[in-house]
Length: 96
Length: 478
Image (cartoon, rainbow over all chains, first blue to last red; front, side, top):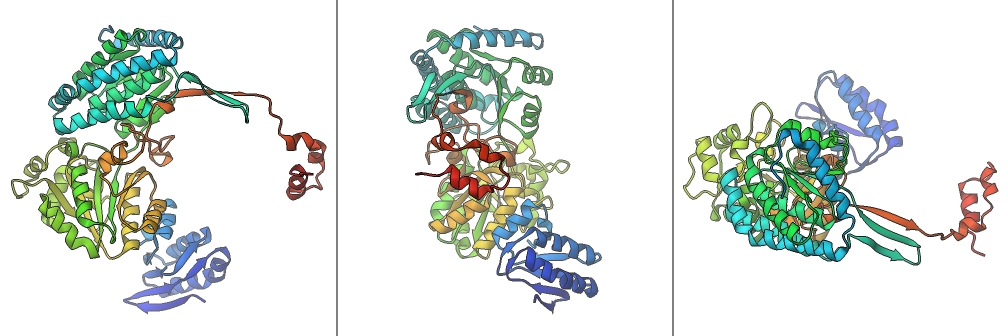
């Protein structure tokens, strides 16, 4: 189960391990639903994430869409994951 | 002796080049090498005069550093290619039955940039002659006289060594139309395009095979295990070289906080000035053109004090380098882009991962495929850094400008045309050299694959046999 908490006016999701296709399919609905209902900025904390499948990139895009104008930001992104977002052209989501 | 060429003469230029290409095919390796040696000697012996000509005509950089560039373009390049087989049979493997034969490509158009005019001219002449390809030189308008003089000297020396007539031609007057006509000419074999992005793109768009270069935006990571004082010394040596005109020169320094105080003290000790936010704003206004986001040509190759005066910066009279502390990378931080001048972006970050992330941002902000540098004594971190960069050259503990061109601080092929791979819209990440200017023919003698010979090919028609079953039978070894 993905953990979510409130922090500094944002809904923060804590991810870890491998975010492969199966795992993303398992958590996608819940994450998207919470993000949509929150009506506030959403943060994905990727500390400890060592793999993301393309399903996670889609999940990010889906959440960004459902967050209805509230920003989605990725924090604690390791360099290999940062490179994935860079090459995919989604690095604007990654916090500087 | 080739006469200066006018716009109307493109057909004549190509006709002469084509005839030179034909005659070149008659030369053997020894004759070819004698020509190359003659050109090396005249180029090297004129290294100082040509450097001064280049500095005077272009107004860029320092003549003393242009001498070193001329040395790279002659002595270092020659040393690298002199023993290369470039004529006839270059390898014969009795086991595989493959014989490789080197053939020249044909007339090559060499685009010469304003930043390294005489050195690039000599480098390209040497690698073209070594491969028996006639060269047609098209210089930057701002460097046409020094390039013409360089080409003339080399051509006279080549002729004296029995090179084919018109093996070197140059265009004293260059227009866009001329360049376009040459690039698209049906008899042109290859373009060696060293220059700005627009020019390289038009070369690639011409339909003629092209070896080009990409833009750089070189990040330099001073990792926590680095010898910080040594790193700064090397960076200064490189960034001040010819006032920063080499495209592989450092553009941004990324430092882990643990070593930042030492790094900053070392920079200051060597004449670097750290600007405050107001200073950064003033500097970016003159160094980067607001409309394009690209470097302002007026600052390229200028000393730090000249640029400081242009920007209205109050800096000590002996300032060597302008350091711009930045908080991010991208269009909103103009100085995070490439500037070929003594200006460096500067970032202090908490740890290794954050530092690498900033380097990834810099690398992808206009410098994909070019060069990245790390100062570190931790092999594991060097490897991690290298795999995360998209760069043809990952330089370790060395000055970036001199390191990337090869031969002085590492064993990369000495070159003044640095391939940047597909990220930089190039076909290679190599330091381009003579070996790229050959068509290699392969004689393939009959050597029947024993596994194929013993395998019943009719089995491929049996759909019940899957890949594993076929492999088992194909690889059977009684």
